[in-house]
Length: 129
Image (cartoon, rainbow, N blue to C red; front, side, top):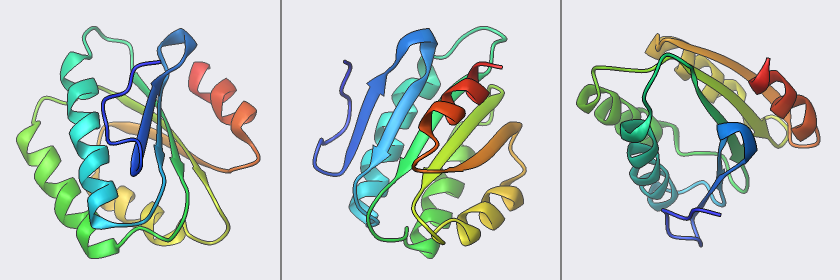
């Protein structure tokens, strides 16, 4: 297991078959900072034409929307050369609608799909298709 984020806020594990698993343990500004810090390392290390496969698990409170927008915009402005992303989001209940809308507005070269937190196997299968 590779860990590159403060474990109390965001966990990172490199799974088999090259899937990068991030778990945001709370919906806070600090958790987002920990995530983007870890994501920058993974993003920079990705090479080749295969998509960057990410399993993103959202736990706890809903993400602070304004802070997520600010940090996302900052991250992607610093990384203009973007690999193709294939991201499966695992979420609890109704926390996903605002996130889904915002991600669509970013217009990243990404394939994304949202799964209930109980559908991890389906999410992993989809990432490997």
